[in-house]
Amino acid sequence: MPGAEIRRSANAQRGRSGAFVAGQLAGVMSTAANAILNPIVVLPALVAGFTDSWYLIAVPAVLAGVLWLPGAGLAGLSASRERPGVWAIAGNVIRLLVVVALAFVLDRNEQYSDDAMLRALCVCYGIYVVGNAIASRSGALVAASTVPAGRRSRYFASRTVWGSLAAITVALVAAALFGNESLSFPAPFAILFVIAAACLGIGAWFQSTMPAPTSVASAVTAAGRTTDRAGRGLVTYVGFRWLLAASTLADPFLIVYALTDLEASPAVIGLYVALIVAGRLLSEPLWAGMARRGRIKAGLQAVAILRVLVPALALTLPQLSDSTVWTDRVSDPDARGWLFGTVFVVIGVAQGGQARLNLPYLDQVAARHGRSSRPATNAIVATAALAPMAGAWIYSRWGFDEMLLTAAGVGLLGVLVSGGLVATGGVARAVRGSWQLRRPGAAVSLSSRRD
Image 1 (spheres, one colour):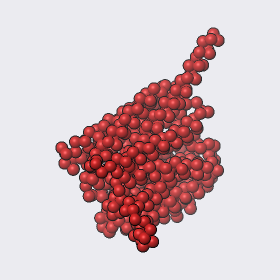
Image 2 (cartoon, rainbow, N blue to C red):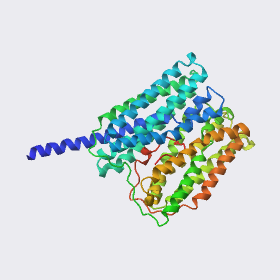
Image 3 (spheres, helix red, strand yellow):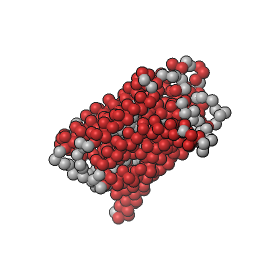
Image 4 (cartoon, rainbow, N blue to C red):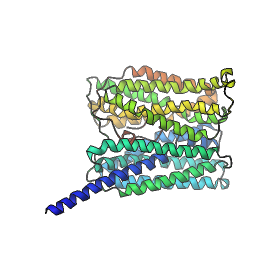
């Protein structure tokens, strides 16, 4: 009957609108929580409060790189079994329980030895990375199959913007907590983890309100032309990605250097996270425009140059702050720490470029290698996640400056190898949501994110 058809159409429209809003809020809360557990700023600073070992300080960044791939593989099962919604909720619950456990342990740190605290932190964060990979990838699959195709680009774009603003907000809250001298270590971290748990709980609830998808589709839409040199392009790209990931070997130690050698205010822990997120957000239009215009190779080369710039700035900015030109004009003792934040802005811009350009490039050059090319690429690149351990070894043998020079050298090799990348075509639309299928960094990563 016409009336019944109209009611069904109206209900379906309300369901799609509800899924759009719920997915937005779930993503915003997830991004805010991930900012609190940043593996190259917040967690190294926390670990450094319990140990002087730079090997242990490197562990969070290593876990973020090594464990994301198996977590994403588990999430892939949700597509084959047509249950991504259940897996997304499960990933959120895993993260929630782990963060609650972290807050509980930190609140009672007097009852445990430093070694016990470090073991708890490493185990909990390892589980968090796996849960985050499951929640992120499965959540993206849910969104791709419930949000109408015409609104999907807008969905992922607005989710990125609002998520970044939420992450900056919690990072500034963190700066205020760390700047409060009445809070002794590790109380600010415990409070932050409570905030992260609240964000994850809210996000899990909104994720659970999204309707079950009728079919599972890819969360990422990318189109382009495959060149005739795709085979060589893939091999070169794998080497390039590996060098780019390995060039982050000094990243987890920059916050420790700022707090100890530069005597920066603890408030910079939150400030540096905000600067990383802001760098990613503000550079997003640049990287997206390069992808659309088919300048993906040039964009990746620019990212490689930025990765060389990170250790170069970390070497030169402290020298500038020690010069008479600086000391004669700047009297604020915290200014050195603020100036050093420039390094983290560059890290954020580089992370944004990798998150935006890696996937469309791999899609285009791997066309002749079948479905196995992407997991093979990720598996090889994941080995570079151990680079911070090499950075800790270099520091223990020679020193901090030598470690930065090594990172710059590896990045420079990446710049040279990038000359062998093949030219690619433009993508049909901005690859909205590609960040959903990658790890948090910084990375964030923090290191290159997984495709």
